[in-house]
Image (tube, rainbow, N blue to C red; front, top):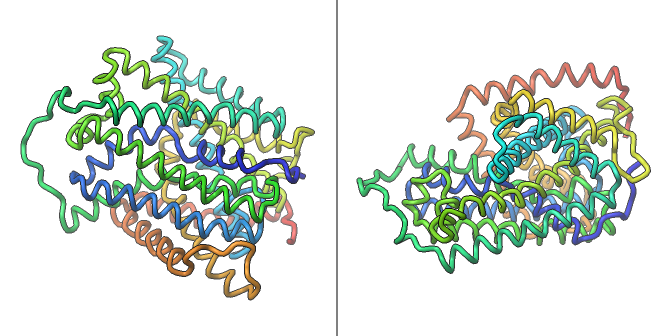
Length: 437
């Protein structure tokens, strides 16, 4: 069994920062600006993402305080809607995390390659790094805690440096000005499509604020610690994201943001000259490393919890003397290496991207269901419920419907995966022998 009362609030907040803030913040602002073409709608989308994550944190904190377990959204889905929904949520969540480890490790190798002039063996180097990250986790939860702290503090300093430097020294007047041809601002259907496209990048970028629920039963005094750390961690993530976006808009201007796929590099080069790109590569390494570490903590615990409920091989329940679900860790590492070696992580993430918002939507719905099912008040009550919870639930459903209409092919694939999951669930339960809870 996983150890109890291991992780303190500082670790949980640092894991939240590590999980939520990855390399996406360096590219998503350009993509969302390109999709929306208008500064007002651009800021509206990023502010909406911040509010969505904060209101979502209120709702998920209630669920986690009510039933603090490790394993993420799987636990809430299974206890509220039954083992099949839990099976779908858990496996999709695990696949997203495993493929995200691969994607971020490949990105880490690319940034390190630019720093050290390495242009070959990308897949091999990514595999080596995944093994190194797994070895740190394998040593035990104390190593996990120290590694997350060691990797996240440089990340915090990197963000503070970028925001401060860009706001103080950023000079858009010194940058090459894009062509001044008139831009047709989106309206009507085009605006709606642009908003959905922008949110497809923005919402996953904010995603990760729920990191505490993956280690819930290992946290000290979880009923109090998890709500506090999830909410305050989310507030910090929102501040960082809005600060980063504001800093790059200040430094390069909205037109510069739309016109450059690497706006942070553009801003850094305007301040530091030729060394700007190298500096951003170093900062990107700091940003990515703690995100990989956090995913290596979270992913195995999903697989471990699925296994303890008889929905995967019993061997994945193995926990070593250090308190790490070791078998689940190495299965996750092998999956990530396979995604990295074959280059399939991009396709997997693209197909499963909407499952993250679907997990959020189910969690928000679960708050309503459990409130009706249980008359006693939870240890923590979501602030503003039912308005805040209902608002993010409606927003999630609207997003999923809009994304399905925009990309019916991916929606059909997702529906097919859910349909295929039912016979897979029946076979898995028969072979592995689900335990009754």
